[in-house]
Length: 517
Image (cartoon, rainbow, N blue to C red; front, side, top):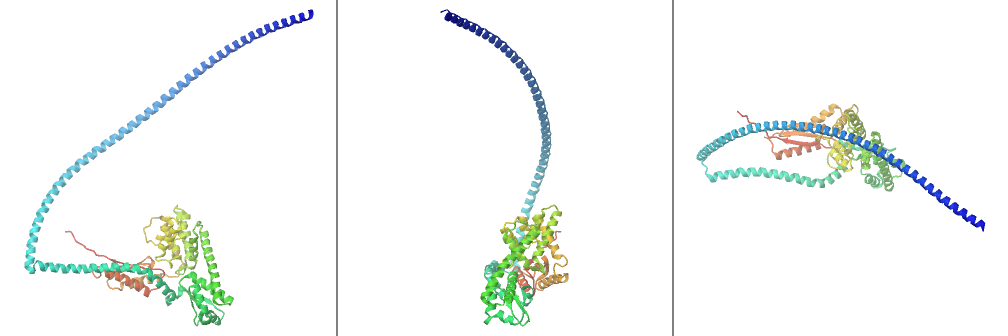
């Protein structure tokens, strides 16, 4: 019994001691918490005091900055006000000057009005005097001529009929021109057919190629039985084959240089192969045409790469290659275009312009010569239309259209291309035509034109591509001037040999001069 009581007493004593210890520890924690809270409060007070001081300093700095900005804005506003005052003073001065000018103008207008009224009165007075004088003259005219009113009217009608007859001639001429435009399209096909079948002697130098044959027996094989081989060859190539008594030579004739070259190459292949019959002819010609197309495309690509002109349309590259088979006064047009491209690029770079664009303009300036046998007009117009159709820029199109000074120059590259074109054509060795032949050709043009009645003067310009004719206004009428123009053009076609076209322009001028005394 004693042990449990003792244990129970010990437990109670331990609980009491534990409770007392907990209370004591709780009091110590409270005291520590209160001291810590006081420290936190003191620290917070110090921080708030510091922040208050910092805020006061920031407010003072901000107020100082705002004051400075306000002063700057105020000074700026003062300057603006001074400037506006100065402008207003100037405007006021100008308004005063305008007011003075208006005053002077009002005085001048008043003076002019007075003068005008005086002139009107004088004019009315003179009209009255003129009416009276005309009445007297009319009476005198009736008395002198012995004509009554009906007779005078009849004579006046006769004069009007003469004038109307002249106007009818002008209308006939107008309708004649319109009819010529309508029938031109229909006549073009007939003319092309005739030109293809007939070539005059003076064009043989520029429209024929020669093919060497091993012996005269080959001529008979080329002709074939009853001419079937030569007919098949001419039909397939579109050229004329001339076989005459000249030993060892067969002549290929045609206006299209590319077709003529295809025919020459095909004929050489047939002679080397030895098998000449219509089926073989057609096969060889088709094969040669494919080779020629590839060759033309390759030449165009080589020219574009040589001049460093990328991004050309495939059709333009093909036309460039065709220029390889075109000559102008014995100068190869493709090499001429490459020369012009380099010269134009150098000139442009010297002037601070785009050298690549200049080379593009120079390379494509004569592109119309590759298609001038397929379209109507000169090669500048044809080339400009082709370049515009295939996406070239306005500078390139304008250079092709105006490199012969036919239009107003709107781009500097056109002038550079014209200068480079003249340099390439006139350099030593470029063309076979000498100065004497050039002058003689100009004189021939002017001599033929001045041989017509009514022509006063004639001037050959544009290197013989155009002729300006001045006719007498007294000796000719508009209708006869048109006839003179047509007759001169026809005389050129019959008497001269020239590449391209010659434009004939007839000018009829009437000058009236009076002397004021």
